[in-house]
Length: 306
Image (cartoon, rainbow, N blue to C red):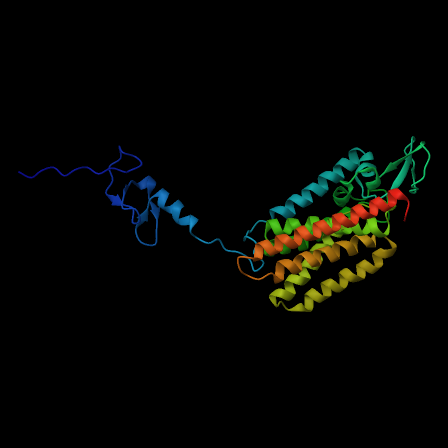
């Protein structure tokens, strides 16, 4: 008399009869637990374990490959939200624009900085400990009815960020791209502080000039045809000269220099296990250098030595 064969069941679902084994762990799996493999099927756990050992693709600069420029979208969104806040409350600009040193009276009228001033005036800007202005000013723009450009100020900056930011983010990856943007913005603000500490400045132009410098450095590193890239940089430099009489050229130049320095580290760091630490060290070093320059300048302003 022939004996009845034992019934085999899925290791994850004991009540489900199964006759297929995982090609990796050899356990029985039911149809809901099967995952296609190069040969046969694997269970869910083996697929997850195998994914851990798969090396994720990276760009030439060490960034993770992503098809969605999420950071560019987020930065544009933050700039637009800040602009909306300006429209709803005009005092936002006075409170958060980049300003190294200034005086304000009880009626809210602004005056040039003087280290020796009467109690009727109050210090404002970085000399008053408002260090956040170094970055917040880079997310503000001219109100619609003010300045040379008005609403065109934010429109042009966001158009430039949309066009070139997506390309740079795709190459650098999100983390490196965000570091580039913020350090470029900070570099622009610090150069404004060093050269024109009494100027009230707003705009993302410093960060965008930094992204422009990154675009150039990356193209050189990748061996791209430089014809179009050189024309782009030529236009950027021409605008830098023109802007000397219309906007804060110090912010533009500071962003350009900071962005170029950061991207050079991203592009030319050795492609081995030291790449990420070296890139991070350069970013931290630049941040520390900018911080030291800002602190020294503010201290000099408070003491009246400049």
